[in-house]
Length: 103
Image (tube, rainbow, N blue to C red):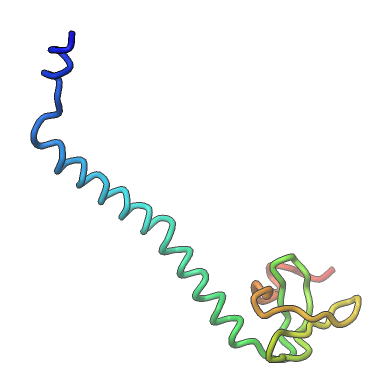
């Protein structure tokens, strides 16, 4: 029985094939998961840096408002309930009429 396990050792060429599969899996993860996320973060950061007063935005928590002031440490949004201060990182995207129509 022990002799059977010893004879069933891996063939000589399987190490390089295993390494090739690992590289292919890493490349797949990079192009399908990591790269799109990095691209999304880059566009979101550039959007946050280019905010203007009067622009209508949506925060990451879903709050809709208009940019009232741009401060060093954040942004003041004017909402239906008053003015609220948020971090720039909390601003998710621009408010669009086609996506959020007013009734």
